[in-house]
Image 1 (cartoon, helix red, strand yellow):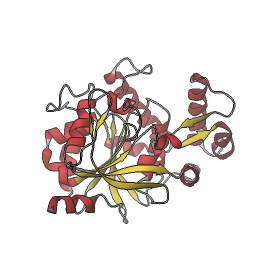
Image 2 (cartoon, helix red, strand yellow):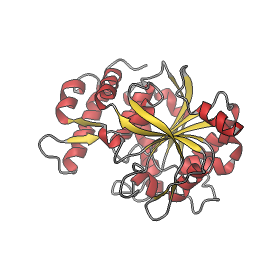
Image 3 (spheres, rainbow, N blue to C red):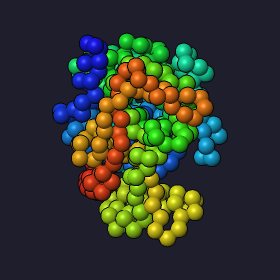
Image 4 (spheres, helix red, strand yellow):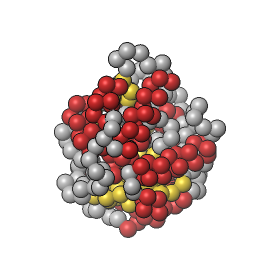
Length: 307
């Protein structure tokens, strides 16, 4: 009971400025770039302590190691566009492969940094870990040093809504073992599901051209890569593209952007479904995104001078 009370305290949205790390498969899609930039432009509330490159494996990579390397380079590209190259010193390469099982960590600079860095925090003053890719680095850190369980709050975007017909989502199915590690431990966790919830957070071509085009070098880059991605995906008249990774950063900023509730944490299974449990630890589940309010804040921050 006492542990649950402490966990619920950590699951409250912080009121003061907090320390965060971002774990991102930045080259995988176009939304990670928006999320990274949004995080850096929210310095009044979020103090970035480290950035981790996460693995991914799809048509943009030759495998998870190549995906991680490309993500690492894309992080540096965004930092350069924003004039924040000094943050390269706290940008770490992550795993080159996924967890082989639920008890064996994958060593990487990112996992070892988190396993060590989180020990300087406490239950009352935790480190906030924003993860928008496969959770390999986070799960590995937990396996390397279980003592960080009570010292972090994990905000993870992955899986689908609890009532979605299946749970085959990219961030999740790449490393189900890693997901089971983080869902299976009584850590403070905020869960932002993709289809059925954060898939509502999209941006359209006309919005990009009107609000971002010509505002600064970063905005032009984001507009270009989003429009290219849309074209590659067969964009038609009135197209929109999801930029859902932004929502994981936004959870820390304001309760105006989304609605959530306390649930018993489910367990991702290897057959693309959740096991719904009634005796597991509690976690926070996001079920609604205020798309227009969040997009307004994102645009205002992307178009202002770098923090």
